[in-house]
Image (cartoon, rainbow, N blue to C red; front, side, top):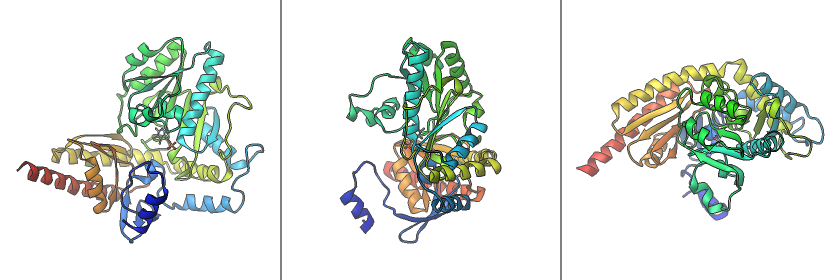
Length: 402
Ligand SMILES: *Cc1c(COP(=O)(O)O)cnc(C)c1O
């Protein structure tokens, strides 16, 4: 264990498991550890470093704003948050924006907004329909909305007002809807749950049901937004507009930011209802503006769609050649490789040794989410490494069986 890893063991809460690597520098899709070893980064700060490490647009925006004004408060006006809000509204179906600092906070705000709307417009309805295997964050309310018992049972009693139904099952949403229901909360593609892609008409059908029942559709685009799936927001590909949307991760290229957006008809917050000390600070919103402007002006979503098709072909060919791969699924630059057995953790370690950083989104699945600026050559190199790792795993299985 290195000195840094000793320090972590001594001083940190042990809330998660880390790989034994200490990263000290990054450039584009590449990162380097404290020993000078180079890696391809296909985790990208959990789909957050959207333009790659130290992208000039991010570095210059950060330096520029740091030397002008980093933080004030929302007791006064500041300009970068207004420019980012305008850019978000002009490029989405939503009308109003609230800025916070993380994804969980954006979902927390979405739940508060939906409950207030229910109180005022639907006779006190407060219940939110969520899906199994969903991930919406780690605060008490968002972890309750998430679909993984392991994350929430240690913290019971949990806040009431959340019901869960299977993902990709519109009938289940219909059955779960009652007089108390104010909203349905969904990820267009479940990220942390294992990159679960629903059928093409799922979102459209849920939208139609929400209209019929008179309830809100909240989309959690924290992982799928800002070009990740090949359109600026994933809902655009599914032809179903949300009433409320949460963004975070890739929005400021790796700086902490979250955004809650809503259509006018449900933007029911009034002064005093919600707030944040750091939310909308000039530093993060100026970087957010620069990232989003770059993404839009350079048609990054269109490039992601093309690169995604390239990656998909490579991954399908892996699946054809390796019996250990039982499924590959995803869209744009968000993919999972499903393995026959709980081999993902071992695969992550083997990939790391070959210079590729990926994560085991499930015990049985690897996830790939490189920066959106990744090149086809870098995609090929990563797939080449995974190819060798899969061969190694298969060989070990054969030796064990022999
Ligand atoms: C990461 C994530 C969150 C939580 O975001 P944090 O910034 O970690 O609070 C919520 N929903 C989805 C879909 C996510 O991927």
